[in-house]
Length: 56
Image (tube, rainbow, N blue to C red; front, side):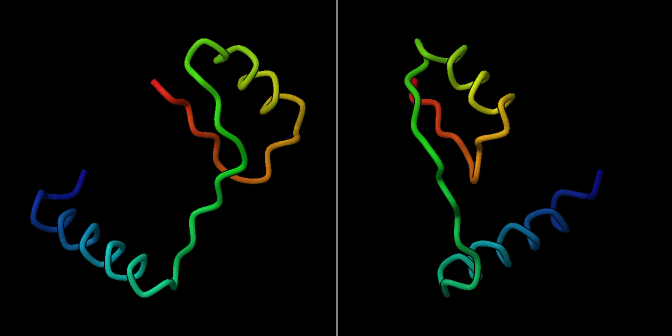
């Protein structure tokens, strides 16, 4: 694992790239925590095109 200061520098760089729009997050679907099994099945079937969000 990298030292804290070095990791912080990476996170700050990623933050800046996100702010500039050079990195875009892709959210495929949202699932409530109660449907965690359904979210897992969705991923296993190979349908996922981006990240899944599990709402707690």
